[in-house]
Image (cartoon, rainbow, N blue to C red):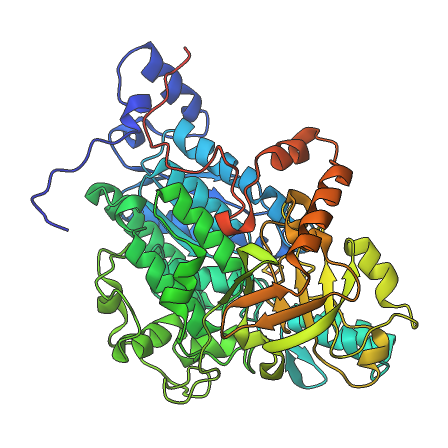
Length: 580
Ligand code: FES
């Protein structure tokens, strides 16, 4: 920071900076917390936006995290004010935490704008909390820094490491296929999540933590330090110190969240084998910042990028090893040294460029952070598909798919919705074999309000018993970042919005060609038109009440980031009028 630069006017002065009736009222009520008068004399006021909740177990250690952020803010001469926002935890919240991502973002946006805050620290962890807080903060655009809660320690079962979520899918398939008992399956529970923190695989939480770091909105190493590692609390402290400087430098989110930073994040997602959910969340964050980002950017920027992080669900290791191997700075260094980091000069929250942050980053383990010429997957970029079955696109994660299925033609076995799937998949008489394609409808943003993570449909038990471990699956749903398989997701428009997915019938042939980016329903064009017309007549609308009603009325499709139409864009940090 330039020493001679004039410090910006603090927006909190509009609350506490006047010697009149209004200043009296704002200060007086705050003083009931034991705050002395000198705290209101021009110190930057830093919000700590906390998603702590005992119902969000991944974020349940955030009170301690916030304490360390506060220490940093105080040390740097700021005045910390912690505030709660809606905590959308993935594991408990029904029907899906994605339903309330936008609700949480509204809470964050209005909490920041309406309160005396000059900068904000975003405490995030569980999947949706990261995009929700970034979306809300982006729409206000004040200085903001992300502090992630960190991943859990490795899971343990019978002397082996097991990964969050990924172990559940694998063990459950084994139990359904009869390879292990239900008793052994349930016995894995205790060792599966054995410390504070988020899922320890490269699931959505770890992916979004890596996205935040590669976007430049967190300090280096924020993504991977384990939740219980003392260095996580040092990073929280340092972030608290840094946000005070950011306020003094007027380093707002809009100066960091540029198109270039999103391109770095897309490339990073391919290198880490990141979750398909990042496609939706990055689009939503970019939309709040007014940065154009389209599905095709994932092909243009990400395609051909090797996956070099050998983490479950695509690979072998877990976040603990990732941190010990060098964490995300090691990955970014490897990318940059091979000219695979598109924008080395992209600015980050510490005031340095991303390349300045990582160019000397040590890498301690070439098995976990592999060399570019020895990747886990040659092309780890998210595969974007289009065709008459997905006119507005669909996605597939190549690093989680079976290479032999990435070009495949098969007969559809169709499920009208998730309940129909659950009832029908166990039918021993179901006409299905390993070459069939499982198709599920009505699980998109409107069809299963919130777009549940049910796209990785479990295979028919009779095929699991035969040792089949993967089949092509297609839906308008999402998939947990911890899941795997040759799974086509986010088909847009979704069935409930009139998309062609809604008219697929048992026995129709479908062609998937990942290399060509094609998803084709092999049904004559006239027949497709007739079926679409019939479906439009018979479409049933869900009742529109409560928050779910607002959601149904305003949610955008997957290719648009599933934000609400009225929330897209930055509404700025102008201080609202006061009412007394
Ligand atoms: Fe919270 Fe996975 S359930 S991070």
